[in-house]
Image 1 (cartoon, rainbow, N blue to C red):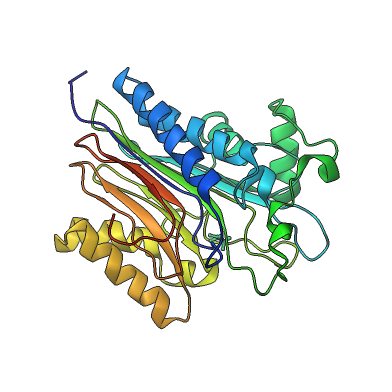
Image 2: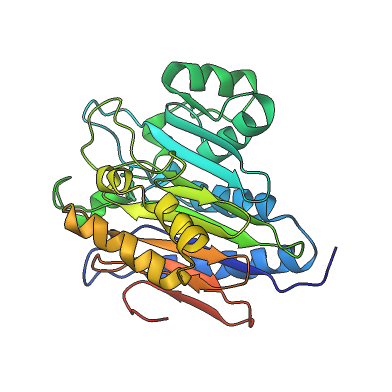
Length: 295
Ligand code: ASP
């Protein structure tokens, strides 16, 4: 293993309410960046660090993913997640998964224990049960409903998802995304988060995780578009990300993304009011913020 610079990026969703107090989330994300930095510096693989970080985001209940997720219009918590390994492009995802605490852990199991890249609905839940993954026995007690405190309707609330990217000492990238999906979604609705090329991507050069209006992120193939602009057009990462977000905006969507290159370029653009985010830059600098642009 070479002694290369590591990097780590988190987003906690592009749906913060203007004027909201997100000091807990900012501190939480910074703590996760510091913990992940130590793991990466100790030689941990990017894939493991991405999964561990997303598990912590999911079970915290602070974000609209995992424990903090919002229900669909039937009151059921259907969760989506994906995990992708850059060098091998191995991929695992779950969609509309009901009844389990960590969708990202289910996604990892799909990657490693099946010949498939995605399991959905009842099949995903049956698989998670066979894998012995931790179940949610009492949804009313488990889910935090933290988003309700905002006193907003589903339509007024924007979105919230979590994502993480890592670059490890071997130069490998990994990406993951986990979400409760859009507020007020129909039963069975699946957004961009579990779809490779839309809400998640990792290859040998670029890793991406998105948050925002999932339908538009799928229609613009945001994550693949960024990777392909870099690979085939030689675009700088920041320019590729801005161009993809502009397409989302042109389709009437909004949101943001995190993107990281194997050479250590790191960008966190958004066109929403803010985006919960934190990063360890390759030079060792850490930022954790919600509303300030340009960090
Ligand atoms: N993109 C997610 C979805 O549409 C939602 C979000 O990012 O908050 O499912």
